[in-house]
Image 1 (cartoon, rainbow, N blue to C red):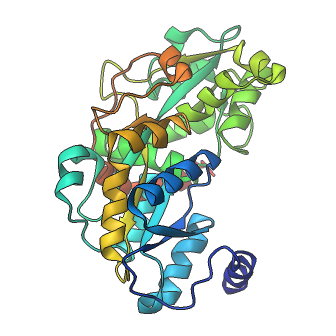
Image 2 (image 1 turned 120 degrees about the horizontal axis):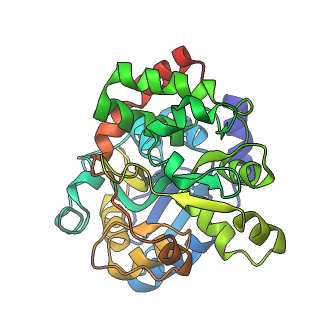
Length: 340
């Protein structure tokens, strides 16, 4: 791991030349695991509006968390930005964040989408995607239905150890308990069309190709294909249908992109100002629409034709902190069920 971190640091040294924490009102140092090119304008707009210059180091979540731990009090980083509540919870449990104190964030970000130490700034849903020529939507109205014996050999998923699925498992545990979650996971495994592999886009393409009949995917992967100008992507989407799961029970599972201020942040005031900026209507629309996500602030109106086409749905109102805290237990449940 240390060699990986050294390689990462060397590769990014020209773009993030920070030798030590420097108290500077006009500087903000961000470690980010959110790798979306559309976010570049977001950073540029913040600098334009405030005069605060942003230094950013991009990397994988685990590498950035380990780097922050190794740097300890000497870290130049002010903020950690990443996707998935379970990843934010890992950083929080390691004591990397300090309390997030902001009236603006408390007022604008719903209580179920923030914790005392970090907040969400966009959301995505985990939906059921099916092959319209193989599966009928009324066969898969809920996450639970994916474990029904009639779907044997029809389910494609990515690894059970991926944070997207661990967060879903965390939500399951919160709603129905550990035993029922394990029973569901065992039924799901029994229905696998093939061993878990690939990312969400791979699952969508497998469903369209007939390798399986149904899969789980985050909505922004679906929306990307919907907005693609590629004929191949449009051919994939022509075969797919989308179900908003559990609309009669606890609602569709929601996950987030979020951020927390690091414990030893040398530029805390700038960090708070940036997070408050992310909660503004202007930034919310850009932050969300750029990656086909939804804003967390109710007054921010997303203008995304793909999301509009997917339609409205009832989201799970479970607090992100609760589902994140169950992620480690979800991993143990999946391991017992054989979801590798």
